Image (cartoon, rainbow, N blue to C red; front, side, top):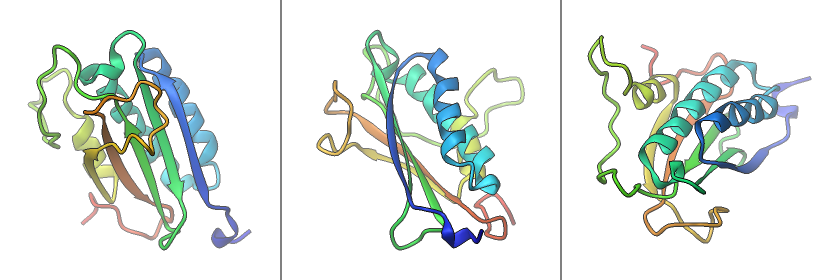
Length: 162
């Protein structure tokens, strides 16, 4: 089977915003990306990091919160897989701040998620969610989409490679 024989992927699923559902999201992604072994591990790891960030830093991690995960492989560039994680906006006790990919100190216990995303993906970013497009039932006006794009072929270069 040739690489261009694979069907386009356009899948979205909403998960409860709890840390124990991260493994379920990873398994769902792994199943969808079986035809793309060169991208699968990177996408799964970055999805896990973005999911954890949504649980920890947004209202998605509060009781009743939700996180939407979307995978897309279609359109003009079928060699680029796009992952989107939609959260429900800032939590009550979390100040609103810009997402930055920085490498924390060697003894830091957390804070590496966006740095990992920046290394493993071709590109990543964040923008306000369009609630008409999002499947989140409890959409919040401050919901955000954190996205990352990945190469589906081994010979394509990722952002972190020289």
